[in-house]
Length: 280
Ligand SMILES: Nc1nc2c(ncn2[C@@H]2O[C@H](COP(=O)(O)OP(=O)(O)OP(=O)(O)O)[C@@H](O)[C@H]2O)c(=O)[nH]1
Ligand SMILES: [Mg+2]
Ligand SMILES: [Zn+2]
Image 1 (cartoon, rainbow, N blue to C red):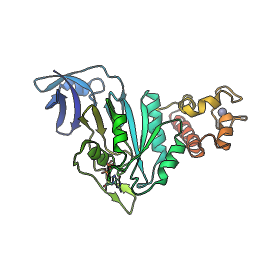
Image 2: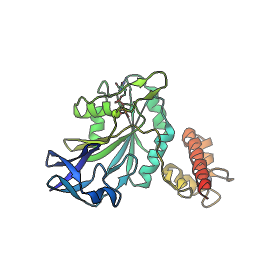
Image 3: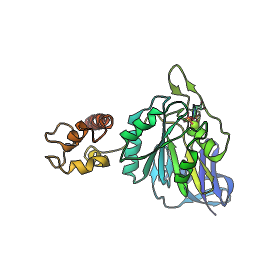
Image 4: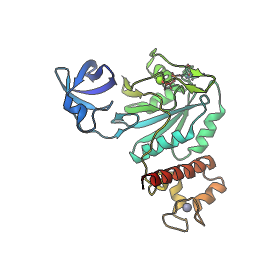
């Protein structure tokens, strides 16, 4: 039987075949050789044992998921958005040829964040405004989700599980925001796919850090909104950091490109450069 691995947790695997869920074990070999199993894998099961993984269309390392059509990054006014995290998710999406969209949640609390996010990610990602709590904007998101498998990414307590509840009319346990430290409590502890009506959403534990696994040389090319300007930079292979006559820098100064995202670009560029020094 062929099915899809929809859940991995400490007590085993769950595989869905034709609308039925099967608790499974994995062949020892699968656990130790290769790179193991990913939520989202299509697998062959024999008597409750996962015997084989079918070829993957793509995979992400963190969260550990495969066969993804889009990454949905959730941000909210609270906890305060970590835009480096959003940038790095976008980078890993571009690198793996997976579309990234951004959901600005908790619109019931704040309306300004949406415009700010939209201006920063103009030409990079679709941005939606939603309130998972009040179920506002959910239909539009559901339209985007049709016939896709997406993974939710974002800091703890931005409302990923609340969104799953809103999209699938479920009542999963959600966490709370610790007022004092403005951080979530990592309520979701393992990845799981929710499937209904041609929509598959993977809820994953909120992650505070992501490694984009990008090389210094390729970084400038992964900022797609820079490419049209980059071709006019004085130097070929301009990194848009300290070179003279850089058209990307000029476009930032003229307000044609987001200043905030550019400042983070330079910081990420320097982070990767330092990381490389560490290894040399
Ligand atoms: N005001 C408001 N609060 C929301 C909304 N969505 C979620 N919350 C609240 O935000 C808190 C965290 O929600 P969760 O859904 O658990 O967040 P999460 O992203 O799944 O967090 P982790 O599982 O820890 O990664 C809960 O108290 C929710 O009730 C929203 O649209 N508006
Ligand atoms: Mg959660
Ligand atoms: Zn340049």
